Image: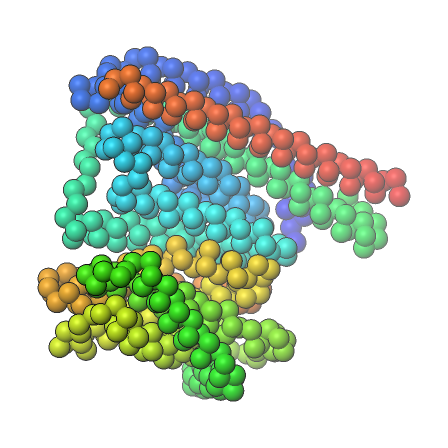
Length: 237
Length: 228
Length: 48
């Protein structure tokens, strides 16, 4: 693992706090804008408005997992612990958005199809992704050594990422063979702008949350390193 | 030359794992007995109506093999861990994949042996009539077990060396096994019901594809996981 | 029918906002706590 000092230096906050304020203001704006300006759908009525929270939450979930995958690959390649900390932060944030996506999916499904759960490919794959997130975080909580924790998490994260599309494919085939209809959702272009704005807003929030979580992890590592160095004799800060 | 050494290492590990297993015969017998017990519990959960049992047989069989087989995976690392032999094993020069291959083959033999017992009992308990071309079902089961053992051996390399290993292995492994299990169950179900041959074939192909993907992935990832 | 679905929509938005605000609070709290601990460790060394 790298002995690059910068890994153990505390992180700089920089312009991130300002980024946070802007992200939140933008989020508030896009939420209100989308709800207020979108006309009621002919068939779905008010239900259509749920799209502005459910779809962006799902998008951000998979984006966060993509970050876990990329950071895990980078960690195994470059052996820089900071990549492991980014992966872990993205996993924490992603798992929360994943749970939110699942519950919003159920809140959509109940009035639309009459059931809370439908075992369709999308919902089921998201649930499996959630289980993979939970397993990833559980593994990290049970391993103390940073090097081992980083390598094991990276392997689990990468394999998990490979698995998600495979699960999606299998469930789709499963339902096709049992002759269950899929639920096509076409999008009327009039809703597109509100959706895109909310995609952006959720993404900015996700980035902010991951960054802050990462900063906390960096402080923890910096503290660990400093106290270890002090115990060995003389903090060379 | 190095490859021949690796192959020799694989054989040595397979032999070691299996003979340690045989000396503690309680290990295999207990696991096989557990598989049968789980089948009985499924029988109570799903029966006693004969048709319901027949419909659910494929699923119950595979879950029984899974729950019992998982016990084998952590234990396959236990022997080295107890004696501190894993560090010694890693000191020898040579590819880590040989360690994985050795353990994979040993676990495969173990789980296949257990599966034979569990399936035989299961077919009886769930009142399943076996179609005449039962060779195909054997093929499906072997494909399924390969995927199960590859992933199980891989994740056990981590779980066996951490705290809370009993919960960590299932937690990590089961979501990863969903495609392999689904394909195995559906193919087995289709074969046992004798109809829609095309369906079983497509699941078998998917299962083969999954096996290839997961075997390659676990072989490649193993060195990152066993070294540290 | 319209009234009952409205309830689901409102619940979705309330839940989303609660989760996002909750994450904000947790994440900022984590940074603050980790930073204090780090500063405590560093100060402790200077005193010894």
